[in-house]
Amino acid sequence: MSRSRNAQIVALPKVADALLELETGKVDAVPVQNIVGGQYLLTNSDLSATDIYFSNYSGGAAVAVPKESADVIKVINEVIAENKANGNIDKWVDEMTKKAVENAKK
Image 1 (cartoon, one colour):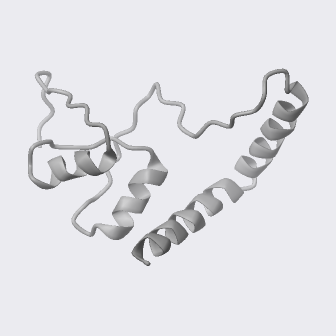
Image 2 (image 1 turned 120 degrees about the vertical axis):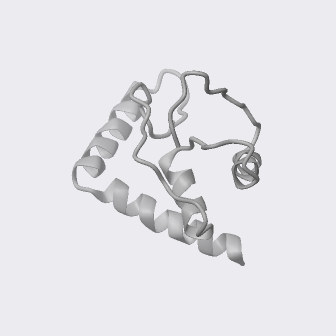
Image 3 (image 1 turned 180 degrees about the vertical axis):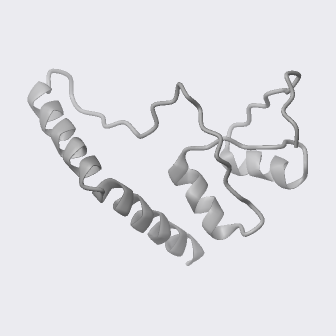
């Protein structure tokens, strides 16, 4: 597939809708977060990942806390940093992705 400067972007409300468009050949690719894509890759052998990443995307997820919770935010950030550094985050994402797929099959 060649890259085109005339490519068109299609916005759809759900990942499942976008993947249906991909399956039927109406779109050429569907960008999703790694954890979401990983779940679809585990259950759809006709899909594959690319090595294309968005340079301005920070990734990850968000944590909601009440306003004025600086002490809680500090602890959350420390725990996240520690578990990123020791590899736990990646391990947990892999484990929970597999568990989510297993639960979806039930």
